[in-house]
Image (tube, rainbow over all chains, first blue to last red):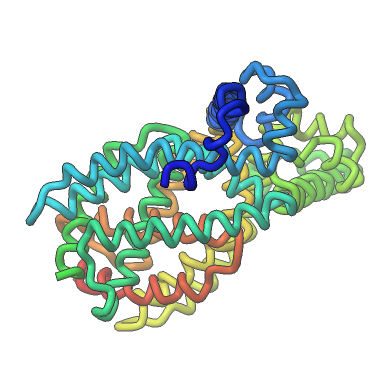
Length: 211
Length: 211
């Protein structure tokens, strides 16, 4: 089965030379994505030039263009790359969530921290740039829609919300939109103290609304 | 009193020549601000160069620098200018708000529309650019704080909320952060249908929470 899944390993001779090449290529791709994420967070979308990315990643322009022919492909892959890294952290936090009365508040902490963190900051750069950049707009709108659906599904699941009950779906949506708004409020200064108090209150609303 | 407040009108001779000059100067300032607002909304912060502003406003570079020596001063004045224009529209909408049961939902419509509109789009450009631009950061953070306090005060007033009651202040804050999140969700595509349903649900929560 392994042979079928990963392909090509029946032919012994090319494998030994191809595997290191593939690994090098994958490592190069990772460096490009890490460099792009770093630049998006430090310098914003406008400050993330493909030249700076190749310099920071230590990758030739030719190799960079081979992996990501356009800036749009590069930045979207970078945000997805960062999100995948953070998903592992999120999954662990979700695993450790308490059961019972304290669960809703704990879920809100995870969501609040997530939207106050680097994935949101990097994504925000793309969302806002996409507002006035046609090339970026189509790709970001599609990605945002997919991501939004996935985040909603995950939130329903961890909250144990029953969306067949009237008004529950809208409360879950409101929770995510609130966290998005809190994330935005956190971009200029640490808004953690205010956020915690608002989420304390929101937990009471959710406990009543999801009952 | 008028003489004291506006100054200088006692001396008759210079007034007749100075007033048109002052008017021309004020009109020029308005054109610069309108051009900046238009560019921020159409092309974003990175696309709003001071050269483009002077071209669009039909104002010489020298005159522009006289009014606004830096891009930071120009863009902040432009967002404030737009906000002042919209405040008049908001004040009318507030004047027309129903009393009684339908008031809260009507307030949420005003807030939701406001954060889905041009003031938010223009301000968002500054907030996000300020995240990675030191020169802009200080000015925007101070402006945002002042604006945030003012919006909060106005919302408390139109909702008739009693913030001495426990949890009420956080509910009002959550309302504004929710609307900010909904505004962000509206930047890539018209999110009005989803927003209305979420605000319908939020009105129920607010009615219970503010009672």
